[in-house]
Image 1 (cartoon, rainbow, N blue to C red):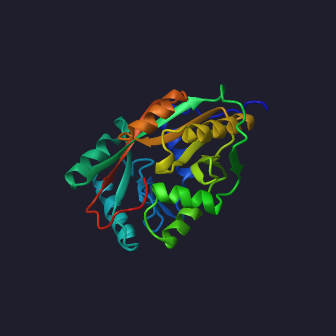
Image 2: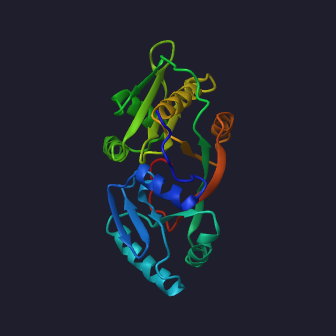
Image 3: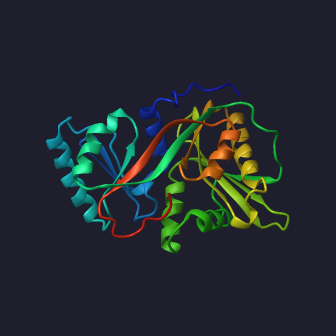
Length: 265
């Protein structure tokens, strides 16, 4: 298949748009350049403000937008959280959030790589267009927090973007690792929900899932990939580095007076 044209993933504004589309919040509103996102508290990403652009470039307007955001999240019984990208565009917003006492947490690396060089087909990895119950149970056991209601919300987030789901089993036929390739555009794919059961870690299952998703993306003509990993996750960072991923940027969450722990990363 002919390679499709794609945005430059190293350009963070383009990548931010893809990331938002790959993990869509069911409840969202745009206000003064900020995208307010909510999903009943399931994952920080789906319950945070994406400051896509500045309201009008003044602290007065930022504070006014913050007041509106507080009202919006308060009506949903959620804390105010910003997803802030670590680059010069965020300096003015960070100054305001510092003054308002927002914390910094969950530093996350944005990794990218070009297509090509994927491994041969692994017939032991199951691929599907929908997350099976087995896939969901394994992913949720590793990354999820909350009961069936929260899992239902997570399922709706996953289904909000066309995706491929990979699952590999251990020698006993029990699901060992899973992953998701989000396909929000014709030219790039995002790797999400990479999870390995704790009893099967360091046994190559995660690598098999990753390589199978990359191979399938290459087959579909994708030109590049991105993924997100917390800075503290040394094991995952090593896996992705070996697969050819390099850092393109970082973000972290800035939260005001957390009242309850949100689910997931």
